[in-house]
Amino acid sequence: MNDFEIGLQQCFEEMVEWRRYLHQHPELSFQEYRTAEFVANHLRSWGIEVRTQVGGNGVVGLLRGDGQGPTVALRADMDALPIQDEKNCEYSSLVQGVMHACGHDAHTSTLLGVAKVASQHRGKLQGNLVFLFQHAEETTPGGANAMIQDGALEGVDAVFGVHLWTPFPIGHVYAKSGPMMAAPDEFTIRVQGKGGHGGLPHQAVDSIHAAAQLVVNLQSIVSRQVDPVEPCVVSIGSFHAGTGFNVIAETSTLSGTVRTFNSELQKDVMKRMERIIDSTCSMFQASYTFDYKMGYPPVVNDTNEAERFFKVGTALFGEEAVHESPLIMAGEDFSYYLYHRPGCYMFVGAGNEEAGIIHPHHHPKFDIDERSMLNSARLLLGMALDYMA
Figure (cartoon, rainbow, N blue to C red):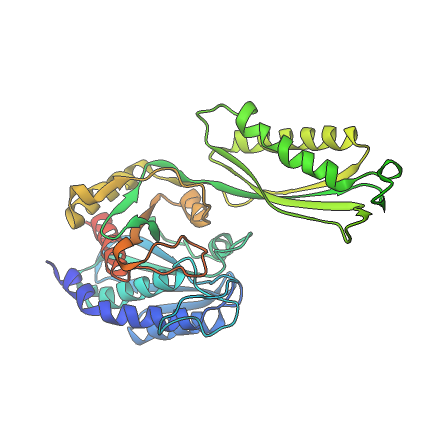
């Protein structure tokens, strides 16, 4: 075990303390003021050069190693979600209606641990480390692109990031070459009918009827119009209409998401949706508006850096604990970093059935096995040091 590994082991309890503090004091996207200050103050205390308000509430730390070599960036996200924490534990959120339900508190604390340990051994660094503490990952547009435009990747040769993932068990790590996480697009459809009396439907244009047919018809895109071997999702997430039991609803609004892994299919699905919406509404003499918002690009890992993951991961955790990740239909704006620099995004298992840590991300009882933070720190620092070697 080298000095970096020993340092991370010694820093683990502190990482847990940081994580629990941040879990109790979550902040939503674009509101991460105290979190950013918490991060910046710790980085400065370790002699790391700090730049704040990067692209918004982002914080960038630069640790210059004593040896000459490349500059490697490591990224963590800081924002929470508008979800009420339903956990019964000592570190439950103290903010009504806001909680860290995706592990960003642990991501931030993990990267702080890496920064502290690396700063203690900067004489052994053959290059520089850049610590990217990103705001607003949980929204579109998120903070990654804004931070990049504000110079967060200047001088950086490679970038790595980790997501603690409760669907994967503690002690295991996952990544893959090429596309790994989907492009998460959003859409809203507003169906305009003609209101009327519920007992006289022939005198009205029922927007609910038309919108209900849309819910069914749009599902034919994936089931009958997309190559079955091509991953794709079209999901309706909300349906709002009507004001009374005996009133024909004049308007209905649907919203949802499309998930794809390549830009051509992404554009094709959008066109097919437009055709289906137009023809379905026309059939019922309704009109519509269709707003389609393209989200983050898919997360696409560099081939060489994915190979590095398998090498480093095996050395750290053993071959049986290192896996090729399945395709994940969730989206991540880490994709923007990978469009500008080679790198790899990785999953570290954070679930533990025996301990009752079974709830998925964005669930009101979400939690992690905190030992996963140490695994995450070891993997992040291991990737950086191997790149510098």
